[in-house]
Amino acid sequence: MPGGGQAMDDWKTATKLVHAGARRSQYGEMSEAIFLTQGFVYDSAEQAEARFQKAGDDEFIYARYGNPTVRMFEERIAAIEGTEDAFATASGMAAVNGALTALLKAGDHVVSARALFGSCLYVLEILARFGVEVTLVDGTDLDAWRKAVRPDTRALFLETVSNPTLEVIDLRAVAEIGHAVGATVIVDNVFATPTFSQAVALGADVVVYSATKHIDGSGRCLGGVVCGTKDYIRKVLEPYLKHTGAAMSPFNAWVMLKGMETLNLRVRQQAASAQAVAEALDTHPKLDRVLFPGLTGHPQHGLAMDQIGSGGTVVSFEVRGGQAAAFRFLNALRLIKISNNLGDAKSIVTHPATTTHQRLPDAQKVLLGITPGLVRLSLGIEDPEDILGDLVQALAQT
Image 1 (cartoon, rainbow, N blue to C red):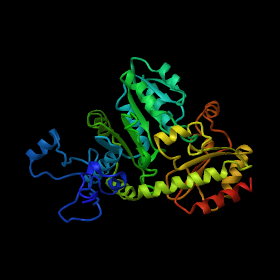
Image 2 (tube, rainbow, N blue to C red):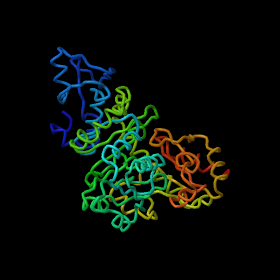
Image 3 (cartoon, helix red, strand yellow):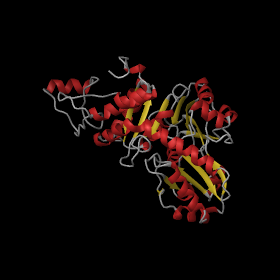
């Protein structure tokens, strides 16, 4: 038994990533099976009736409600995060939308950090259309959070590390502010990754991931997951998601399970490469600034080390000369790929102002620090010397 006979709760993260949640059929397969089915057969009409009234822990009705392969993934990520339960979704944005929409109703108040991925901001805009009052604050300003919360504040929402400017929010302090008024604290934890996550210990009530990123790790499938208490997952979130159709497919769940087996190895290599690249580029004459929480000059460096213990796997930097220079840099890259994903085994670069955050008004981009020269680099698992060599030769052509 892994862990020298220890119970699963005592296993370390690296062990849980390989073994937690595993189910085996009568055939005793080593690799988790793909139960590629949308429905399930009942022995009798009475059994079908009973299943629809209340399904047991290992009983299934319809793949939109649950599936054995999907359930393995949910149990594995819940074990890593330290939550009671989890619900897997078709994409990361389905997870964000579900986590917020299932909880909120017209007349509720939500306070959110303004430094969010563009699609997350769009979800908040949609909620506002339906009568939810949304207040956006500077996530790094604790006084702004304190002033924004009210007795009727239902939820606080933030990215633990913001995309793409890599601000780190004091999650412990924000959670205390939210809990003081009875609010649910919901965090998008993608940049912290499951490997470095301490979100629950720091006070998060609900933890959301785009599994498309580090969990898959090879750019194959879309997926998302919401982690939380059993009451929240099964009584608040599940009814909304199972009736609105945001379920993860069994095949994608199997891909995520396989990705999790190597997640710890990949993320630690990516983080080490990110640290090396950030340090090497920090004083590069072609760059106006390098943003990376692992650098001692980062405004939240100490907080990042306390909350995450790492600078993460993404480095952002501003190419001197604005968009034209940034585009020349991107187009000169030979190894690193231009794409809008992150957390992949391949190093990926994107220009946020014209891609992931292009729909934001220019004034909001300025407020968030998304300048025309800003580039976001997601480190892969290639040799860090090759990555750095490609960056340096491309910068020489700007």
